Length: 438
Image (tube, rainbow, N blue to C red; front, side, top):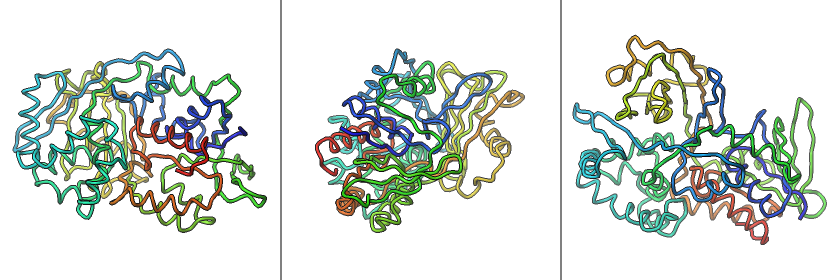
């Protein structure tokens, strides 16, 4: 088969190129940034590579773990689950290290009996079949049909919405419960119900090994910003128009797979398929800011390594970078309060200073000197999908049917987790090989 272009070098594009290469199909991988990785990219801090996103790897991430094994020898280390929040003036903690009974009482405090009764059938569906924990699955399509005229905030009592649902949605979708919908919540539950490890060497080593492919099947075109996708004048196929170092170019391919956030794909298709672009614009993305800060002394105790905050705070979560990195804090800013107070022009020092004031009552920040920090404002940031998302995707399929040679994957296809992005990529590659559109 002739070379396939993959547009986007984030985790969805990396997964797509991996599955294509596995099938013996050569790939040109286009990425606008100087390096691949996208929202799971790494940066150096104090001589160490640190990851901004996607570093926690679920035990059930079968596809991603296969990618890791095929790419090299990259050992994992335990990360666990450990979080706390203030309810009725008291700190309530949940951790995988504690006894199950303690977690049960903590869960009941967070959700309340009414919340548990609503949530239980959804949890049971994902526990029974983990594949239901992605977008557009039979069980949650049925939930969507019945309930997506409501938001999650409408479906759950306030206690559960504020203390259980919201910490999940602001962390995973950058959105409040009234901005998320029941039919998509399986993708959140799959993450909550998993347990986690992380790569000992971080994502950087893995991505570096992937980029150093020696098979001749992978050509990575970093610094190439794709500006437009259009039908080839001659027969089928796709023209890929790009800019690189201030100069423009165009290459024609028989087949192209886009692996971009919906909002970026919409911009590429606006000229050739405006109706598809309009559908893609209905997929919601919300900005998120992430800061990683190192301190002279430990900030956390091993038994309490994270705290989530309520809707009045632009800081949604503060947690230890790793189970042994108790002096390294990952601050996450998402949700409505963060959007109101933080923008692309906000100064990193001011944002982190406000976060430090917020965590002061809970962790060892007072007189603990911050030695370094890195900060990113990401927009598009986190995907919150759309109401009746399975219908939206069906509409998109109909509009793309006329565009021969174009296939679509990304965080809005099966979900935004690393495993969901790999599942979507695997599915798209299978369809390309069989000639199916979706």
